[in-house]
Every structure is written in structure tokens, then in C-alpha cells.
Length: 70
Image (cartoon, one colour):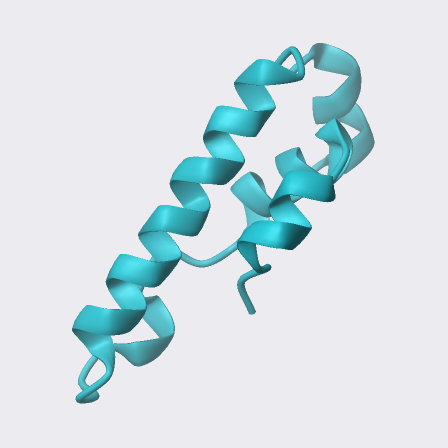
């Protein structure tokens, strides 16, 4: 489940990196449903904000990548 924009704006770099690595692609959970276009747009906006905040906070580091894993 995608976080809200408010949650993204309050998250630390580790949580932002976790989300960007492990969240499904935007719209994935609504494929084949009438809500697909709306969900795709909403989740794409959230993912874009996650990526923007990650960059603002210094982005991926080897340490974060090792901490989060796959």
C-alpha cells in the first residue's frame, strides 16, 4: 500500500529508500479495474515525490542499500 504525500514528506531517507525499492509499480494493484487510471496517477505522483525527497536527503548510499537489502 502506498504512503500518503504527508507520510512521504515526514519520512527519513531510509524509509524513502525502502519505499522506492519495495513498493509495487504505480497502478499495479488496480490493473483491470475501473480505478486503474486514477490509482496510476495518484501512485505515480507519490512515487515521484518519494524519489524527489530521496535526492533532497542525499540519495542512495552503499550503507542504505546494505541495510535495506532485497
